Length: 178
Image 1 (cartoon, rainbow, N blue to C red):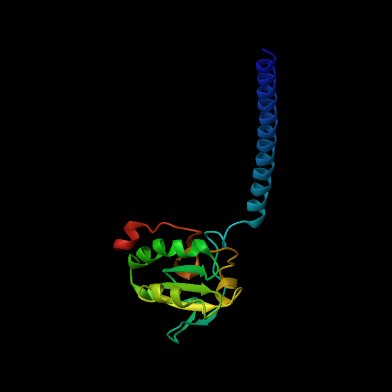
Image 2 (cartoon, helix red, strand yellow):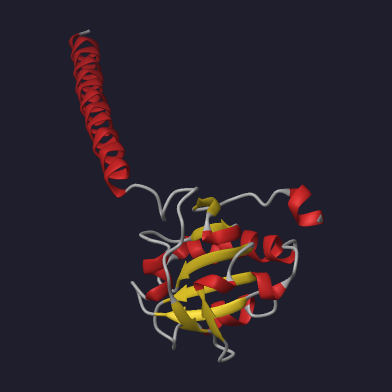
């Protein structure tokens, strides 16, 4: 009988210890959630907000075509980083969306941010559907769109005004059919 009492007391103490650990983990997760929410708020959006006007820039595509701010009205623009895991996944959404853009490839611009030596796989995937620019971080296009996170996608309307912007956007099927 004394062994049974000792076993019950031991199991009770283990359960109490487990409960204390669980409460500690929950407190830690709440504190971490609060910190992450503050970080996201400080980080802001991945690029300038919808309704903003894109800044001036001049850049060259991998096909040696010069592109400036005045040439991207009514275009889809995507920013992808060679060091971003999420950017590889974002290509699976961006490429089919680019195929829907009225005007086709000339109205789609993809910016690959990073080393030219690492940009090859992005350029290969994007070139059939978009004009591709490879630039260093904080290059002319990233500055013009105020990009601070990747992936970033925008629809640029008349006058360089962003009609949609974010980490992902949805292309309006009515616009795509026009």
